[in-house]
Image (cartoon, rainbow, N blue to C red):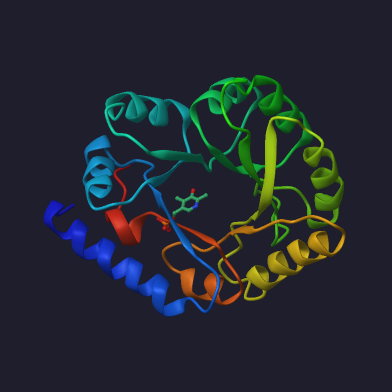
Amino acid sequence: MNESSLPERYAQLLQRIDAARTTAAVHLLAVAKHQPAAAVRALYALGQRDFGENYLQEAQAKQQELADLDGLVWHFIGPLQRNKTAAVAEHFSWVHSLDRLILAQRLSAQRPPAQAPLQVCLQVNISDEDSKSGCAPADVAALAAAVRELPNLRLRGLMAIPAPDDQGAFQRLAELQAQLNAQGYALDTLSMGMSADLEAAIAAGATWVRVGTALFGPRKP
Ligand SMILES: *Cc1c(COP(=O)(O)O)cnc(C)c1O
């Protein structure tokens, strides 16, 4: 990747987000998976503070390398497993990919008491794909009700990675969230939209777009 073009890509991406925005604030989560710590550092220097990681070990190595940077906010967005919850609870501010109660219970129990509650989104398998992680849409209400009771988690909203051909997916996720809010929740976060489809996601109400390649260029394998 061409280092000197990162500032241009960042500025263009912020412009894309702003152009698609209507009223609500839309935040950019810079997805740094398979990108070196130096790329995160370069984007930090341009003002970006929120970064997403999918793989715990890779994330922890980068966090150590970047420990001198103040105010970095790490979001875990990858598949979560039981043996990863303690480290995620300790080293991240947000989890976007929470999809099972057992994982929520572990994250809450393992969140260090000195830290603010872990901000969480429930990942929904909005396109009903066999291979995808995420809670089934029909099970979201029950999971939300249980997660809401956990003391060290703060339920913020829903997240999804729709199938590429699923045109109505963002709208359906927004409707699911609206249904929960009509039942007394105050969810303010819709984590949806990536490099290729962030405009459509924002049009449907995204508050976080998760962007990797449009920002950093192609990932190293
Ligand atoms: C990789 C990834 C992204 C970013 O995808 P791009 O197409 O590179 O923007 C967003 N969300 C999740 C969960 C990812 O794994």
